[in-house]
Image 1 (cartoon, one colour):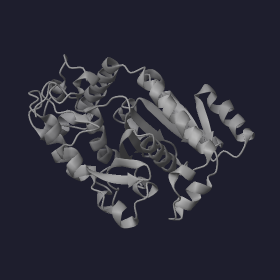
Image 2 (cartoon, rainbow, N blue to C red; image 1 turned 180 degrees about the horizontal axis):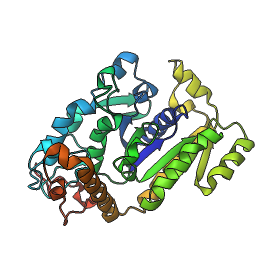
Image 3 (tube, rainbow, N blue to C red; image 1 turned 120 degrees about the horizontal axis):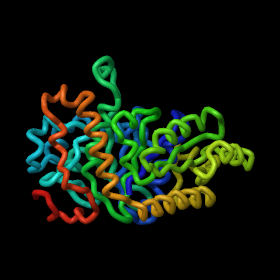
Length: 331
């Protein structure tokens, strides 16, 4: 399952995504975590020290390798240079799987050991001063989108993405790449403003969206969130002494996280599992192609000097049955 955590800056989405990742690992799920936030704090939230977090390889720096690997022998893609972030897979493309080893993971992922298991962690890389004036952050997130477009995943397999705050994911359709989007909102007017923006964008694309109330101090806060987001409110999470200790660099064992917060994390996992039952791979592929054609027309064709509409394989549907290594792709 592909899960996104979104929300305004300071809402606590990175903290909650790290808690969810720890919860999944404790439940023996297979997890690939991706830090796609401009501030790159997920590694620290998962217990890496400053040097370890800084040493994570940047996916954006390995984009040529990612493109070359995913292209495979797809005859519709003339070169890796003509691939853009929305390029869809087709016959001959290489696909990614959560539980495999491949050159993309070798270059971009690192194993992080948690109290109750281990996960793979990937990071887009920070937005640096050298990027100012020549790049925007969603160009770095493009490496994540390209990987999601080529990813097949099954039950008990999770890709959890801590998204950047704001609306960058709407620029290319990345918000449609997830089985479930958890929007983290504080019980304030400003806290729920991002919800309305996401809801408006997601409505026409069948995007599953649930609100996780954070920093909830009582029933009054929950009542406020219910009045603002209605049935989209999944659960509220209160202040956590465990999180405060972790943020001070003295983490306690994860099993000591407060019982009510553990129950809230289980509610998130239950919602994610429910979304798995509603998967529609044909719609997923159709949306992928839709946004690729939009990006090709608006800027991709001009940038690459190629007709990127020709990259679309009309007979190809991404599907879980392609998760076997022998299925429709080169070794």
